[in-house]
Image (cartoon, rainbow, N blue to C red; front, side, top):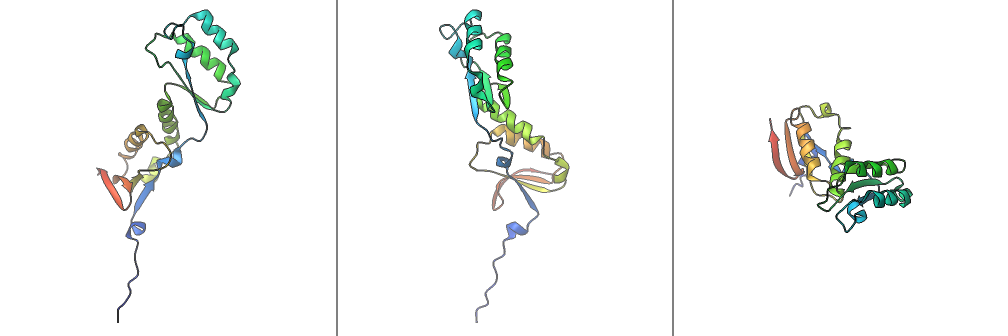
Length: 169
């Protein structure tokens, strides 16, 4: 007689704690304002023209959006130009940053990671979940690792069944 032994999920019984950075993704529509679009010949910011853009642009289109402002060309943009854009966006946007959309994602994740109570992970074994469906920038993984390293026993990357060791105390 063959005895059937139950299948035991050793991963679920382990003391591993999984952190999924996708849970810290800031929902919301992203937008970018590229100042190069408002430069004379794509290179020079002319104050009168720029102030006309500031005056006539539909700022309400950014209502509740997460906005990145930058200039994608190698032009010298005076600081006050970014300040003017910010002053017009502020009443409408959820968040505004200087930089690309990639910079925006990094800033949003860094802000979200401040909500983590690091002491909850003291002396724990952590798996930072890898692949997912939402864009998680490398900077978020770097920051999480920096935050956890002083308190955890170990950090691994991937899925609990298949991990890459990152840190061990």
